[in-house]
Amino acid sequence: MKIAVSATGGSSNALVEPRFGRAPYYVIVDSDTMRFGVVGNSNAYQASGAGPATAALIANSGATVVLTGNVGPKAKQALDAAGIEIIEETSGTVKEAVQVFLQTRGG
Image (cartoon, rainbow, N blue to C red; front, side, top):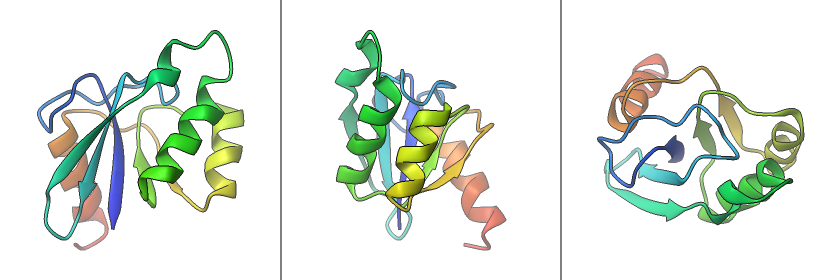
């Protein structure tokens, strides 16, 4: 599965960004191989509509799960419509967040 993690930087050692729509980066992790790619979030600097636009970015990345601190109502609605699972109140580094998520799933 592909896991999208909101991040402050473009690496697995970056901290999880607590704001979904305003995260400057998303680290996309393949849970089978633990390889990752980085997607810059140009929506982070929009005056409005960052959440739904970022939800579309995540859907286009092929991710089926998003780990982040907090998701606003419009972004949540867009993620739900795309069938993407939302895990909020995530913290630590991207790598730590993915490990904790996979451990809770028995993976």
